[in-house]
Amino acid sequence: MNCKSYKIALLLISICIFLQSCVPIPAPQKETNNIISPPVTDNKMVHAKGTRIVDGAGKPIKLKGVLLEGWLMWNGTLWGAGLTSETTITKRLEKMAGKEQTRIFRTHIYDHFIVEKDIEMIARLGLNTVRVPFNHTVLEDENPLDEYTAEGWKYLDRLLTWCERHNIYVVLDFHALPGGQGAFVSDPEFINVWHSPVHQQRTIDIWKAIASRYKDREIIAGYDLINEPDAPAGKNLVDLQKRIINEIRKVDKSHMIILEGGRFSSDFSMYDKPLDANQVYSFHTYNFFTDETDEKNLIKLTEIANKHNVPLWNGEFGAHKSSWIENQLKLYQNPKFPINGWTFWPWKRVSENNDRYRDLAKIIPGQDWQKVARGISNLFGPSKSITPEYAKKAMEGFIEAIKAENIVFDEEIKALIKKHSTQ
Image (cartoon, rainbow, N blue to C red):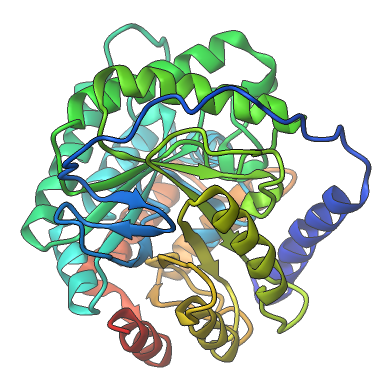
């Protein structure tokens, strides 16, 4: 996707955000139930303490890191393939290369997109956190059963071990719920999670399984329950979050719960009180139209955080020029805002090489992949000139390009991230 089409894509996203803020929607319905679980005394995990996040020793800590999107959660914008969901990417690749080659490609992405060397490089930047988006399909196969895939657990288990070695906290981020919870990023299906009791129960069950498996892993900083939820009304979001928390707390009393609000994680008006005694509000910050920072929104978020005595954490920001990125980082350091860290989006991606949308680390694929990526993003599907042999070669080249030893840093953005990681 060239710079022009990328700008068009970002414009469409921004229009959606604008329309969502302008078109009347059902007023968020406030919840009045009590907090689900009391605080744990002597909590050895990273946890909330008032408006601060503290480590297992009770020392204040700021979770500063990067988003590992493009690995266990695919997104066309990170692969040079436009506003395409994981399902669309998969179907288009199957059309070009065949199902078996696409299955092999998926395995290679899972095995090579993030390896221990990536975690080591992140640690060398002075960062202490990775936010790990995952699709429900990582743990569920095509016919969800009570048991989850061993392969899915393998990737998460391995990551936790690497992060323990390099002192990098992990935020597990449910980026694509069964059915999807919002726009293309959440890999939506025809019937999304908000309109399907079955999808909701699958979501709850997955979180309970994760919490049961990892309840003793101190390297996990928190459970990010639903990425960028787009519920019909605030009540729908709060109800599902409560049900998830209730099941998590049956098996895991200690890990921090991370809640995202509506309107692309910028609106928290649906909460009139915390849902848990150990929780954080996580907001996202993007600006595709202007160079204005989100200081006005931070003022509103700070009021909510102080009223509820709950920490704030920036779960995503980026996709802008270097001056805006630095101004945002300075805001997050401002003591008048109780911001307990930030996550730069993303760790690595296929770059647009555009000063308006700067990257930390660039994936540089060959022309073969660029042609395949256009086939993924094209409204009418891939060109018939792309043979299975050509697609296979392009996919193999992409796997090489994503490896840690082959990515190329934007040195200016790298310096900014490193500078602010230790402040």
